[in-house]
Image (cartoon, rainbow, N blue to C red; front, top):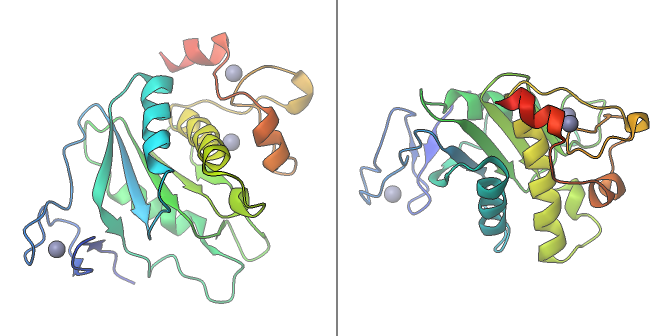
Length: 208
Ligand SMILES: [Zn+2]
Ligand SMILES: [Zn+2]
Ligand SMILES: [Zn+2]
């Protein structure tokens, strides 16, 4: 399935090389040199992206730009799976990377899974690659307040962007106070809520 930009005003599917929508003339892609670019797969509820952008700006001391275009929803659809293909969504975000952009973060309300055998995933990134994704689906299933949901999304986003900068996990049993503590089998809403959104000194050094 071909990937496309979707104009948020016209819902037109447009080639990835397009900078402006030919119909409404609004920009599809904003400059993101040295910045974190946020890409949306589908609509995101009000009150999440603002705090997310603010938190990422503070965590990484980088400007954040929310791209006005939507990511094409078709390529990652897997009708027989419990969610969308996380690796396809991640590849779509990576495909939108432009040289000089510090990192790209894809955000979706939809469930994402690495394969049909999984029920959910909070986020995904490959180490050292400038793209990461976050799903609000599982972290929103207990109907949290907007503030709690934003904090969870920010925590996962910081963790995944840590992976894009080459950081690996700390094990839970190491009891290190760091956002990079993680274990696919143990991560839950509870571990997100009880964990820190900060990097430990070793991770901060490794990112520089
Ligand atoms: Zn348009
Ligand atoms: Zn991780
Ligand atoms: Zn750490």
